[in-house]
Amino acid sequence: MTKIVIITREQALATDLEQRLVAQGYTVAHLPLIACAANPIPERVLQVVPLADWVFFTSAVAAECFQACLRPHHRIATIGSQTSKAVEALGYPITFEAKGNYARDFLEEWLALGLSRQTILLPQSSLSNPLMAEVLVEQGHEVLAFPMYETRPNVAGQSQVSAYLEQPEVIWTFASPSAWESFYQVATRLPETHEVVVIGTSTAQAVQADGVPVTAMPVFPSVEQMVQLIIDRRRV
Image 1 (cartoon, helix red, strand yellow):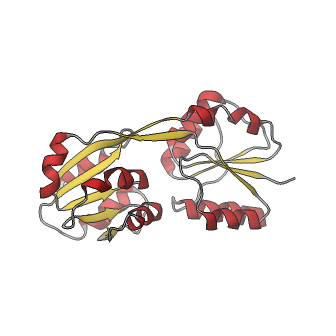
Image 2: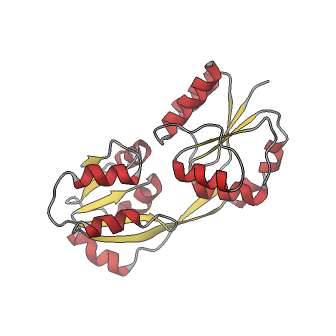
């Protein structure tokens, strides 16, 4: 029986990653359970754009939504390979890319640069943790964090969940707490033969808080590492 790997994030898997799973005998299905919608950029942000030294992107969606405001003098910092790829695809160079994939790793690495007071724009999800901005301000930097986009349940995706729950072997993948929460709104129980693979500790905590066990989580929180983990587990 072929296992189905379900991608619940808004973006589909990159073609090369999907092909790697297919080569191992999996079927890949894209079932987006969240939808992101850009917010208007506040006037206070537009006033700071010409003055900003840095723009920090923590997601590909933030980069895509904010790209029209980027200026040649802006230095761009990113978290995660998917974010970096999105920025580069838009045609912008990256000044700083964190080696780690968590906000705490990024902060430690960027602060180690020892820069004097910088003006930083931080476009992010309306659901983002304020920790990054708070730490940067504590370290003497001027930070303007703002909700660049809203993350909502994808009703069309939710309507298809029940059909996959009837399949005998499924690996559900979740890259964010919001994707899991959208799933849990329509399915509070999983068949015993279904597995849950997550990216990131916050996503794992969200799943476990609802009483559902997490089958596996990559050490490094990235889509690439998640795909490799699924492949490695099949080989065992």
